[in-house]
Image (cartoon, rainbow, N blue to C red; front, side):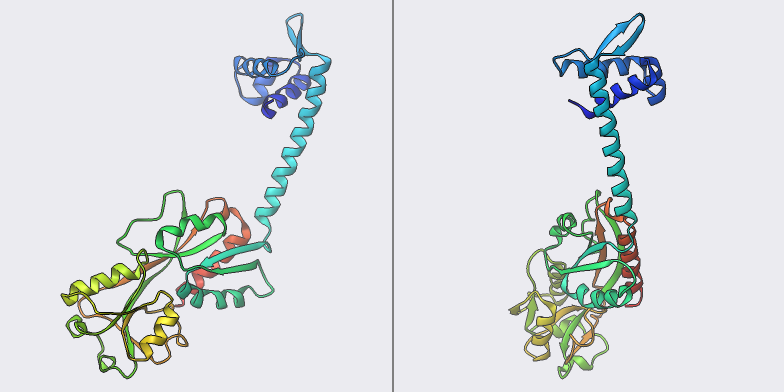
Length: 297
């Protein structure tokens, strides 16, 4: 049985006629009659009978109408529970971020919300670009990155831009290229490189560098965690691409970042959410704090 049709029985009992039910619900009388007929077809006992020109409920119909009142009460309770959930400013907010974003966002986010606001459940997740939208099923906010020139996020996502971040070449602090204000791509022709996995924004940017250099880049290592990559770069055995603003000074100990001459390398950092997540007051608060943190990077 369709709960909506059971609710119509309750309306019929309370308002006394199909026409009155139609006026109350903003439907046509024929639409109400069709719904009642469909409900009748789903049960074996008569729910209504004719009383002159009026359609009235049988005892079975009145019993089902009472169930309709219970359904209406349950729906009202459900709506109230959802309203309280959405308006709870201290509810749990699950936030996921890729590694370098987690370095920049998580600690200040905790500090900003400490004892005043939503409870945080933080997760670091280094996944390929295409995987970020799917993560919104398990997290309220997913901090994701992509190339500004690449495909946009799926239309069904709610997307809030956080940061357009420059990407530089990372070299050891004692590397000869560290003395340059900007690095000429030609100077990188025979330099060993640390590269990244396919499907990550840094990978196509490395290809852009190779095109500017005019040859493939010698691959010395294949590391996806930028903090690990930075320790290898600091050893002086390879160079790599690194984000300019989200790595943090501690992670870049012994490393300097330099832009490339004549090439703009960037990535876009966004907050991804399902539309229903942004309705929550707690999620809105966390999102506002993330935007404030991003503005200060």
